[in-house]
Every structure is written in structure tokens, then in C-alpha cells.
Length: 307
Image (cartoon, rainbow, N blue to C red; front, side):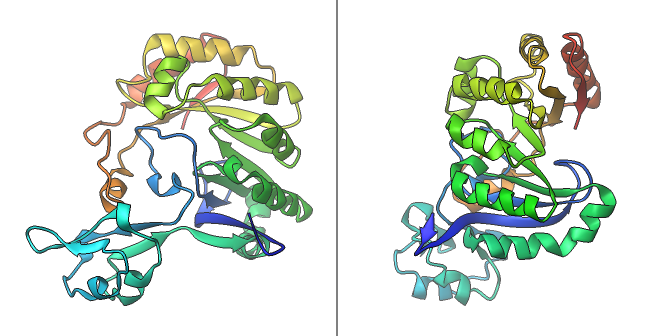
């Protein structure tokens, strides 16, 4: 996206000192917009391309200042006279945030330039150098803003930074191929090997995702780590793990598989953005179960670790 002649992107967070998504100490840049709607998504604030207002009801003191400034009626009283937020009516103007001194409202999503992101990322350059770290682009889905992400990656490499991209792979191949030229590591997420089940769990089939992974692996130009979240009752069956191992074993450009245990930490975010979490009562898989699944993948001749 451009404002005038300047290229800009839409992000919802920049987090420093991350250690899980790529080697060493890293800065994570989270971009807005995602084509998938995974039932277990831990970052619902990254799904929509537009900015989204989150309402922290537990912080609200009922002063009513937001009601006076909201132009669309998204801030209102419910039947019990409590203040609530109606996401469908919200214009994302942010006026209620400016008046809320209880900090009960927060807007996720801001427009940034490449220079603004670089200024934040370069603050920890010494830590990247000493730890073997760098910068990881995540989301949301970074390829949804391919032009902006491409320019970011080019600038990261000009500065000598290690670059990583976390992607669901559901994007146009030319976009992914172009980004790969400026990447050192791709964290490629697979959700389920069966396309019909994948569509039920995420809203889209996996045909394009698997095709893009094959083509990316054939390039042999970037390290690829395939990652699969382990969602009990949904994708943790033996057949799915066997299919994962079989598929990855045929991709010479993939270094291995990482299984990521489901966690419920993002559940509260759904209520704050006016949605009901789809998997609110799901427990995390046990370590013993994760080891069993990893063994199945390894039996296919693929290196597999637990995240």
C-alpha cells in the first residue's frame, strides 16, 4: 500500500527479545491480515487487514466518556446498563481510546513506513550479532502485504541482518518466490495434510499451501523448517502425522519438522474483540503425547523436534 509515493504497511505489534521463531535473540514484526481463520488462532487481532478495537471489560469503570465520543454507537449500554463494545459498528477511529483513562480500550493496527520499522529493529542490532539472532516477520500473514514485506526484507539484508518469515503459505507463488530471495529462514506452517479437514479447520483447502511448499523447497535457496501446531482432537491423529512425515521426506530443501503444542493463551483475546473462541475448553497436549507424535514423523525419515 502507498500513501502518496511512500510505501507503507499495516502492523499490530513489534516485539523485541523474542527467542522462539528463529535462532538467537530476535525482533518480531507482526503484520495485519490473514487469509486463514484457524479455529485455534492465538492472534485474532492479526486476522483482519483493518485496525480492530479490543475492549477490556474488566478494566472499565463505567464512566461513560466513550459513549459521548463514539460516532457510530459501537460503545453502548447493554440490558444490564454495563458498557459494552459492538465490533460490527466500530469504525476504528480511536476516539474512545483517547478519552478512556482506565485503559479499557486498545486499537490493534497501525500504519508504518519501512524506515519506522527499521528504526525499531536496529535498536537491538548488538544482541542479534552476539546471539546469532535477527528479525522475524509474522502475523497475521506477512505475504498478504508482499510489496511492503519485500522492501523490509531487502533493507534488513542491506543492514546485514538474519531474516526469517513465518507463513501459512496461502499466497500467490510469485510473491513467495520474490520474498525468498531475501530470506535466510522460512518457518512454514502446515495445519493438516487432508485438504477437506484443512478447510474445515482453517477456512481454506491446503492445495495451494502444499504446492507452494514444494516449489519453495525446489529453489534450494533458503532454509525451510516446517511447523505444525498440535491441536488435540483435530490434527493429532497417527494418520495425519504419517502423512506429514511422508510429504516432508520428499522435499530435499526442508531441514525438518517442528511440532508446536496448542496453548489457550489467546482465548481471552476473542472476547475482547467481540467474538466467541472456538476452542475455549481445549487443553494443551501432554509432553508424552508430543513425543509419540514426533516419533511417528521421525519414522518417515524426517528430523522432528518439539517446540
